[in-house]
Image (cartoon, rainbow, N blue to C red; front, side, top):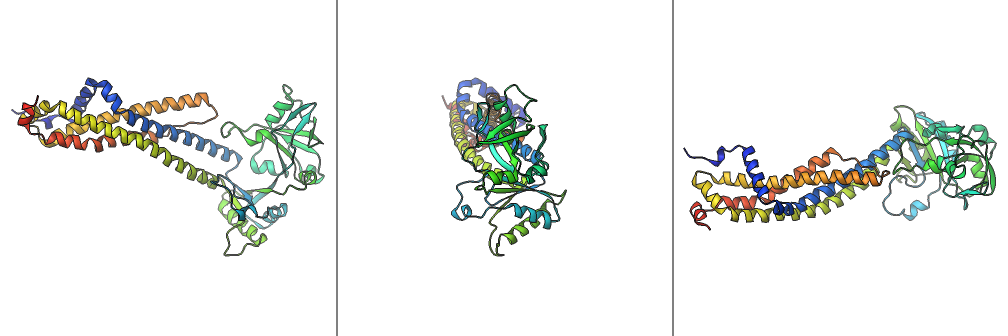
Length: 420
């Protein structure tokens, strides 16, 4: 009875492919190096981008997913400089916020945030200074609108704002710098900001989530909105934090847009001269930027995969030459052309699949090393990247293994047996 190669099950063909790879370990390793590098690059970059995205989503959720951020300039993730028309836009005002709170039924509350443009925002306390503070004038409902928590003392009240009191609520980095080892004794301390005396009435609780381990609130210096206008009359950039009622974010967004267009004199055929940001919009902007980074990563890895594929094809052609007599024997005992094609294709696909597996393992190790060395840089390996890396590596073996496999199948068995 003749022994046909077709009687081999795919598992047996894969086993034969592994035997061939083990017989030429160094050659096989060098052949799949491009595959390994290509798969590793894609997975490492995907893990970095996925980790950053998860951190961004967590930060946004902590501030509130039901919020709308109104500002006269574009917010979020922007690519390139602003155009001249945008730079000339008129800033929003506190009165705009009052109009929204009064006229938008779907809005729960509107908080004002004035960015103070002091030339010197240094805080001084008994000879110790802190330069990194970000001074903002906020309304009393700002804490409720952005889920701000106070660790010590209290937040700014309506009385503080109405009376333009010189009080402030500071972040944890400000406390650590000015009051080292004095936690619990900060509230009531008098510091100087821009040469003016201010009383610290509260210390912010550090946010659980942060992007790259840092949060703007850690360096925050919140003073009453009207106080900020009094001490820095030149400051005019106001952001309105608008909290929509539960389940009415889309309705609130439409109402806010209509009110601001009317107040700012925007004609029906003109685009908005202000920006309305939401949690979903910020994430979408981030995704659009990371998509470009992903394309660049794919292009870089594509070069490695192409080199690896050419190497696989070359090594399989060499293998066909080395195993000419073996091919002749198989054909002599009844192997058909498709059996030979299948055998060499499985061998090429096994070779590139091994490269894909090694690339995945190295990508996991590299991600862990990066996470260890840079703990503030999040990394989360997505399952789709691993599956895609393995699938592409196997596909490379299939594509670049076709020619050698077809060449082997077309060899004349008599000539093969006579080959030395």
